[in-house]
Image 1 (cartoon, rainbow, N blue to C red):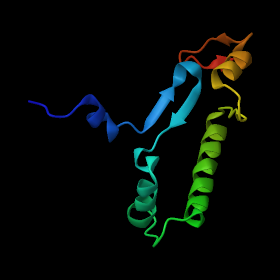
Image 2 (cartoon, rainbow, N blue to C red; image 1 turned 90 degrees about the horizontal axis):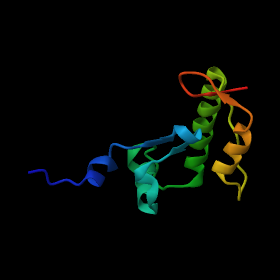
Image 3 (tube, rainbow, N blue to C red; image 1 turned 120 degrees about the horizontal axis):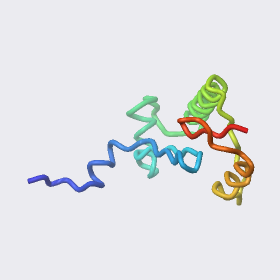
Image 4 (cartoon, helix red, strand yellow; image 1 turned 90 degrees about the vertical axis):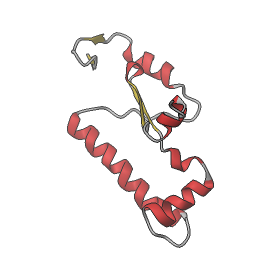
Length: 110
């Protein structure tokens, strides 16, 4: 008999949530949900730092964001920033008005 729930099975497997139909992407790192998880991430898992600090986080974050921008440029994918209070669905629908879905990948073309 299987003693794991679906949630337990997915907890370690699902790291990336793509909401392709809405044309935006959310990333999820289960370990970083708690302060203790963040501290462990920097002390033991990746950085071997004695303490977790923003000094350790900043270079890693900048490198990650630059990688996203490089990928988007290479693949000719537009990055649309959202400001505080904006709703992703509303912005996406406004941007999509008047455009037609034409490709097999369901990407937007003007």
